[in-house]
Image (cartoon, rainbow, N blue to C red):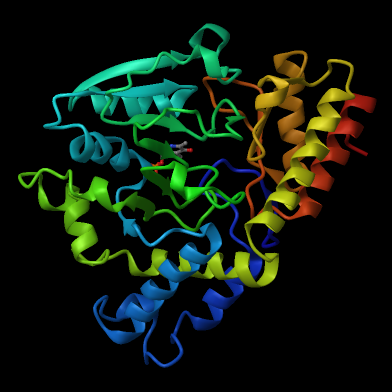
Length: 367
Ligand SMILES: *Cc1c(COP(=O)(O)O)cnc(C)c1O
């Protein structure tokens, strides 16, 4: 039982095998450093080289303009829920707009409300967050401190393919579960954040891409770690950085550049993978019912349910017996969730699609 399974976990999720193999080779001794990456100073040459390379690779992958900073911070997505309003809302005398399309957006709002005034510019609750807003449905404040949205709601499986239009208001995005799944036009954003453990690397680090003018908003009296200005001034070395996590984040970025061929190629592959599963849903005569509205379906988290709870349970048990792991939907949505981030191999998705067809055909895919 030491074989690697296909892991459909929503996070922490798959890492590319070649990244794990390289980390394994370098675990005892990072070339040139005389020790592992976990045992060297975060301010010394070898780690600085990794940090610089990680930033450079992100800049290349996402074509990040010079007037944006790339920060690697601890505390995951959750800390960003608080840091965003603390730095960008507090003291402005304004309110912040939140476009609410699922569970994570709700949690972001809870944190922001502890800091200042929040306006909900749209709320998809009525239809259990199964769709995104149409352009005309947003109730936006042209004077807002910023407008926040989650590009991919990991639990419901809905994903924006075009950024919501918010005029001159800085757009802030929680991209925790889809950053690096496709190219982005960074200039549309004021700030993008993502915890790494879905698409970018291991748990323990979050990537924050922030426009220069927003860094200047940080209140000088914030606790030191919570200020973007401090992290930007110190180049992500305000305190001891999560060195191992950043090392893996860099290897994943290199994998995207060198093995996948960049984010456009990654998007093509992600679309192919998602289509395989959505085709099974659409051709199942209602046996598999997708949660998300068709045009809002996520490329990263495919959510659906079976006709009854009994079939659902059997599906999960039989999938697992075939090495298809962690397909259980989030308790708030139920059913099945197949998370197919960048590092999920095409073969894993093929195997799941075959399993699903067989399960429907026989009521049991067990041979
Ligand atoms: C996982 C996730 C988070 C939370 O990230 P943590 O690192 O656990 O704090 C936030 N937003 C989205 C969209 C997520 O998928």
